[in-house]
Length: 239
Image (tube, rainbow, N blue to C red):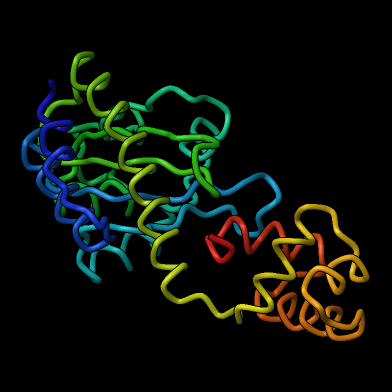
């Protein structure tokens, strides 16, 4: 078993994002990296085309500098992550065109990474496992990860995203904004029942059922009943 999976295996349930962040820091340390994050990968339809850190051990200063330097929207990285499910291994020489013999020519992106001790690293993309596409980001003052490390860490990335999805699902269930009646109506709507049929099953008037469904639709910021059912189920509100 790899070091990454041994660390992940020690996570206690119920899973939580703070515990997952500690886990990611332990994985980074085990592989000689200083910076770690779970980032979203924007779709081609997203305005701004930026990656967003969801969980990270970054300082506020580094996070803001990372964004200002344009590293959340660096197009070669985004294109590769959106188009290719394989890990993107990088170092500042090959990815950013840095010439160690001419450090004065380094751009703001390279200067930031050097100052932070991020000379090499990798993005490990995960597509379609959760409600968003994303990647596990690791960087540090070391050589690019070996082939064996890349295999271990890419597998770990899938586990990390699964745990993140599960922890958010549980958190959503605890903070469920829907009333019991709203959940009942949505569950029956999910089965294809009409308002009239739902009313018969729950001993409610069709008007009352429609009111419950309209209220639930508003609470989950959905555009219609079908959208509300999909969102509520995805967020764990109907469990």
